[in-house]
Image (cartoon, rainbow, N blue to C red; front, side, top):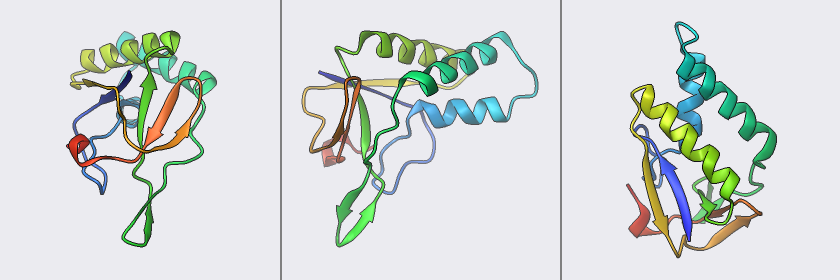
Amino acid sequence: MYVRFTTPGVVTRASVAPCPFNTAYDLWRERDEDTPSLLALRRELDWFEEWLPVPRRFTVVAKGRRWSDGICWFRDDAREMLAHAHALAVLLEECGVPVQRQWTRDPGQLLYRDRWQVVAKPEPRQLH
């Protein structure tokens, strides 16, 4: 099973909702003060920067062009990573940003895989 987290906002070219990381970085950069929730959010981002590898491949080839449309999914056996992802989601929600969680057994065509996550080509059923 695979889990992904999404936040509202600008979707990708393939109409896929954004992940919470960009939203969390935006909140941190745009903060007016260092609230406890934002400081905890920054600690979670620092943890991910240290422990979660940046996937080497996000590229999808469609209609003869290359697009960075890959969707990241956490593996359900990546327990520590998921615990931190849930903590990040809770902190975003405390800051007023709703976070949705999705589960699937079939994330689609895999573009990248490591111990904690996969990147898959978006399928029509996953859009929006």
